[in-house]
Amino acid sequence: MKKLKHVALGFAMLMGGLSYAQISVGGGIGYNDGVSAPGLVLKAEFNLMDNIDVSPSFSYFSGSKVSGYKNNLVAIDVNGHYKIDLSDDLVVYPLGGLNYSSYENGFRQDNDLNIRVNDGNALGLNVGGGGQWVFSDSLRAFAEIKYTISNFSQVVFGGGVLLQL
Image (cartoon, rainbow, N blue to C red; front, side, top):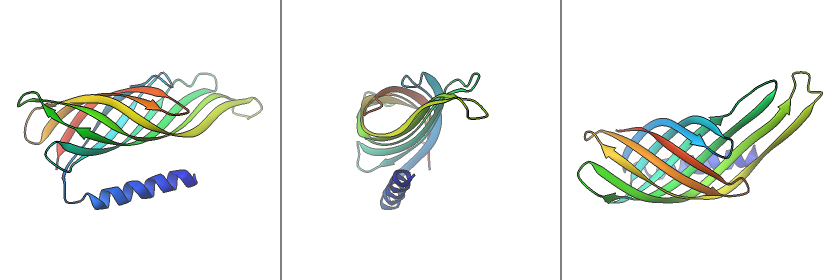
């Protein structure tokens, strides 16, 4: 829990320091192969320079919960993007950044007599790429794929929409 507080504090400091930048916020859906589960993604982008963005995100992936078996993951990411304009409507970018994941999978009955749970936290590095389709000055769709290098390595696909504020 202490690590999560430190990550949240760092995230808040990053947000305060980037308050002068162009900001986009949004969300979408994703899939995480580490827990074999779909999930929800909340994302922001802060444009620092013409082609450079910082993009913090929060993801929750919830796998199946059948007869007490539970499989889920929460991730906080801060990535950097170097955007390359392919056309007026299409932008692609490599991404790299930091990841904090908290995961749990295993079997737990309601009476807690049979507990076999694998859980933990992992810090890691993200590498990947993505693209954005521009619909208007304020609305874009995004798609990303990234690999997280950590004690709990994972491939994450995500997509959704961003609204420029």
